Image (cartoon, rainbow, N blue to C red; front, side, top):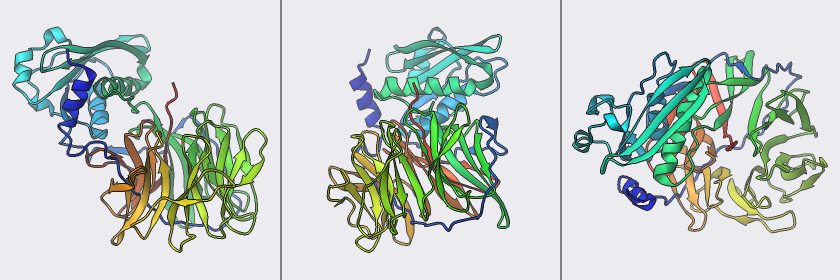
Length: 455
């Protein structure tokens, strides 16, 4: 049986580049006007009125060829194999082969004619079956290495029949981890904001959904803007900006109970909340001193500490894993660039160069990379920058992207992009492959934030 290192080298041979993981991303700094009092409707854990459509319009053909054979699943609502294959394709590391190219439809390794598969396209095969046990599903699956016929995984997962997609995401996570040595992030969630309706009659919703946009749930609905959702590190709460109360304010909402509390309500700007890695602080942008600066709020005491004092616009904070340092956007040199500061009394250090515009920073979970929006030519693109080497490459293709957010394993980035008169969410792998699109057919979708691991 091949070792993990052998499998990782095999995966690397299929990619046009490995984890150079350079990048850059930028977005316009918008200081929204204050709006009138909003009537807010809390609808936590109820189905959304319109879901994101999973438009698998991207992916990669340069990843490892893998076959996800249709599972034997009588009566199951979702095609589990299709969900697993789409998850793996979205990572950029794998290229699921078409079902027409599969030399068989085995459900166990004993059913598999290894010689037939060796003559085909796939390097690995995922197969399995589903049995119903009342309102539960028992799914047995296997991962087989085609080169020697060895069984890499043989496992059983039990889950709710009403959410069989969660079983598929869990299988994709296990396959991804087995072949790469890194944890999969397909079982995590996205938060985002939708906007629909005419100029004089708009509705905004804060929603959470699976990592592929399925199973959306509405957390908050309002006739006034909602902005900048930020997950707590345990995945139990969201911080966000709401314009109710005749001005912007930052709220924190418990996703289990629906209860929410107001974190800030200062005159002027209250924006861009960012939860610290340990969950004990939230960094925000406030203009209560007359200038937009970064402040850090201790969640135990609710005491705010001013973090920046530049006289410029300092906004869009993002934390480093040390729970102390913050990267942020500032126009202190004229045009927006990204800076790092390790404490209120420390000097800010510029970390983006060679681009006239850099904004919307997000530090990767391991602290080694930075996703952001940069201006390149006439467009705004999401990119990733390797912090140690100051190298970057583009992750997006459209030229009208904003607000990138890392998956908790750092392998993918979700961001918003213009699409005609509306907008969509796109997910790009950071190590190769084309973006995939999550579209919303009833208006605009924006401000995505990728949730943490929760187990």
